[in-house]
Amino acid sequence: MESRRDFLKTSAIATIGVAIPASLLSQKKTGQSKKSKAKNNYPIVVSTWNHGVPANKAAWEVLSTGGYALDAVEQGVHVPEADPEVSSVGYGGFPDRDGHVTLDACIIDEKGNCGSVAFLENIMHPISVARMVLEKTPHVMLVGDGAYKFAREHGFPKEDLLTKNAKEAWAKWILENKYKPIDFNNHDTIGMLAIDSKGQMCGACTTSGLAWKIHGRVGDSPIIGAGLYVDNEVGGATATGKGESVIKIAGSFLIVELMRQGMSPKEACKTAVERIIRKQPDYKDFQVGFIAMTMQGEYGYYSLQKGFEVAVHDKDGSKLLSSEYASK
Ligand code: ASP
Image (tube, rainbow, N blue to C red):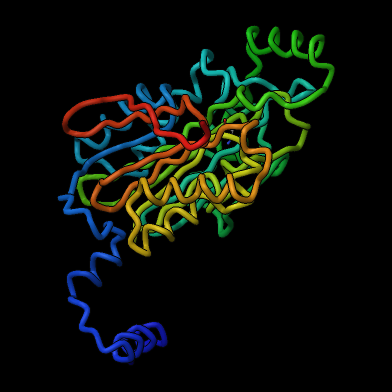
């Protein structure tokens, strides 16, 4: 039976009296940009910022040996989550203004199944808890004490994530800033998209969020469609930067839908950044960066301010790329 969607598609084509070649229709479905003649480029992994380089390397070990994209993104982002030197993700993350390291993370598989945790404390690998929410519960999102209890019940150890360095930075901040404005430069989530050798895309996003945030604040990173979105009919997108601004435009979902309409990954990221500029008058005061990738492994990125970097690992090796940006 013809679905309503198919009916609308055929009748629209009939109305305008134009024969659209089947190749163009299928191209739209997979999100490949109209201009692009890109061949499949996978396996591949892309991620945000320079901590994406070692993270991609761990993901690539999975991808290059024929492994599953979901394992690749989970194992990839474990690297910054466990690295005490990375002050914006997991262990070593800067705390909120009350001195608590609270973590947000989400993961999406190739079928669109999602798992997410937010406002989670004392667990080193929130991404793995998010994966457990995806695999072991009928829900998408667990937060706070409930997420912690769930993690402990599933064997995650309780760990103190506040390192000496982070504690010192927090103590200094209290003295100097007296709970005044949030420093929007002090944040760098890892968002990661990977396509495995079977052509399946999965994504992960994990962060300790904005340093010195109000206790209880949740950013874009664990919000499906804001910090991360993956739809294997089209591709995926992930975000970093001021989460509030990304949530307001449903950033990653917006980008995937723009690619569905035929935009290239870069055009889609740029359009999302331009929407922030149009709607958020204080855009000069913060950073937002997006990465997007089609199911063919064509990727693009764009940011609001100078300084955003994107790590890529594919069969040609690893590279770190500087993003074009909008705000001059
Ligand atoms: N997007 C994250 C948040 O708002 C911050 C970041 O990218 O560093 O929580």
